[in-house]
Image (tube, rainbow, N blue to C red):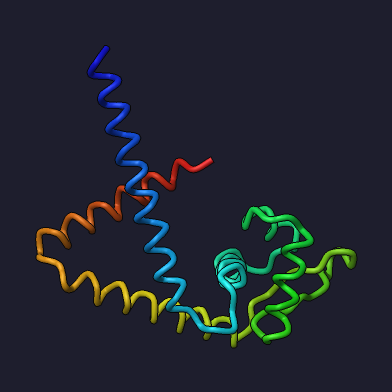
Length: 148
């Protein structure tokens, strides 16, 4: 029984360290973003880019925020010319959020900047450590596949 408790404690320690490292990394990457766009707006815009035109309700569910919050986020994206809302031709009561050319451009620039930042940090590591990070990326992706 002692081994199970030790193993559980070790797992909890790894989970804690991993959580903190991921949060700090995410914060650093957010700092590489464009100044006028909030992290919530970038996230919503990325979802629209990935999923295609979506309703506010669908986008709220994907982003796990309340519909009034998503309405404000999308309004901000519209003000900046990064997204538009268009009435669904099949149901005039429904509007779908679309990404604009400027929105695509912003996402591409943001991703390029963040990837360059991270790649420059990774290049400072020894080859063995870079290989471990590549394996860790695979494992993190697998962890996320089993997300609720």
